[in-house]
Length: 319
Image (tube, rainbow, N blue to C red; front, side, top):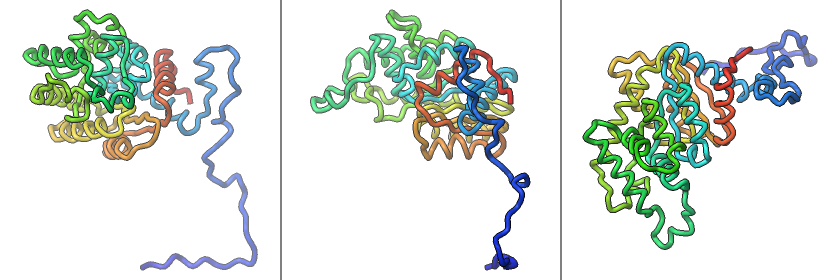
């Protein structure tokens, strides 16, 4: 084992000029006082150019750059994103072309359907679990399985089948359906079901072959989206700690195996706490061959509207 180099002993402590030191914080990056004009643009520019605030700016810049280059901007999300009331924000990003593909888990389809059908979702689990009534609402299971059966012969995947059913059906709150918005815009929204994790598995109409086939079709769809991320695309993981990071890693590996050159793109993780899989499977491993990644920790109902507002106003990184 190599010993560390021996340093000459001194009789007293030495110092050096502060001007020769390297710094991580400088006054040019400080926040400014809260603006009084009430505009979001002024507020945005007042944020410090340090840590998460600067990362948020760089994510906005990456999305703008992806649009200019014609590369995908894909949003992978967990059901909690919809349960915090963000469907209108995400629908607007889809309609404006800031999001060009979406991917999610099975629970999101359930909540999206219930919002469109009934204007309500997310039951109080604790109060109904003891009676065996949790997840047993009739219309949810009947409606989702009907949509999947209708979409199967058309060659659609899970996400499009459900989105088309809501878009064309008599749903009083369909304007709040992200699935319907994706179908209307003609962009992919893929659903990646983990069997046994969603309440639909409890329903009498549960058909594992149907659900599996439709979800596997969606895997092929999102694999091809990921294959086009190279050269400036953006993959955002919002609120999924396990399923979507795992889907992303496998689809990315398969895309590269098929010959897609997926390098030099941006990955982002947005969540309330840091998790192992998003760190490894979204932020670290995928961009080892080239790219950049950003982690922004915070509540979805705050961070995503901030991101969306900056995008809609066209606020670029001015640093």
